[in-house]
Length: 393
Image 1 (tube, one colour):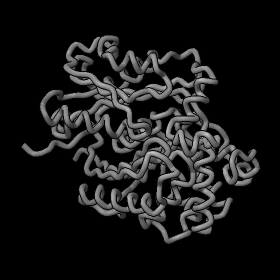
Image 2 (spheres, rainbow, N blue to C red):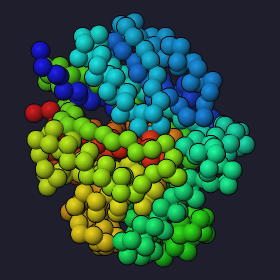
Image 3 (cartoon, rainbow, N blue to C red):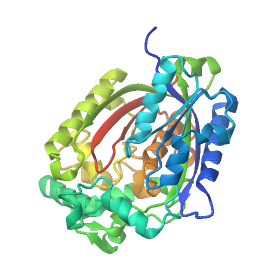
């Protein structure tokens, strides 16, 4: 029997934001129920549960690790359960594990949930967690290096090498926020989209990064129901099917990472994922990029040849990546537009990819979508996982 293609058939999600009265389990219940109903199945049809490990939430992680979700949800058909942590790449690896269960006939249908509630974590604990997560404890942590500081240095280097201006970098934020303003699950839904001047007039966090170019921590969660593409077809479900995938590992920390290695990884993994799907980059209708900070977006765009060297900033500034543009880009607005929910930004991006291919994306819906490219990465950029998704034809 040949390898079965994986299909997302159900999506559930709650709005991202600061909701301290909404518990972690409230979110797990709501998103899982939504995803099961969206898939048109009964909860007891779920035979496996693979959960994204919630960052900085030790008690919840322990509860999930020891199998509490199937019991809490009353999944009487569940045969196996596990938890996966690969930082922002966790959802990709949950999907890979689900593929293994389905391919080996251990499960026909798998539920993949994620939840993050930052607002109830004590501030000191939150600071200490993010001060060490993805930071080298010998060469970075003693000097007060933070994610904002690391990305600021990367941004400065990229701007120097590419000739990208501060205005062009700010236009990436404008583009991401334009998509976010259309998304009911975004922390910035319905809010005014900042102009370039407003982005650059916000306070400096770590030069050249301004406040509006950095992430806002938030609470949120989502869930996916997956099965094989063949089973989805037999069920008559609209589905998003994984057609190609590839990945590259770079390094655990930025101090040991080569920019050229990263660019080679972008190119190689993207080329292989597209080849696996049997298409070219010109066939992609949406580039659903999860890169957390603005700098990754123009850097990736140039590296894989979607524009000329040093021209990506202009692509964002001229509106080609905006809603209605010729190159729809990060249609939930990435972490900048979504609010950062730990590993959950990649989960939200997969949910968006599925919605776009199911024609369920609402005001964000891009017309005539056949193929979507989506990436994830973990830690401070330890790796790059490239996937290509298409309709269940």
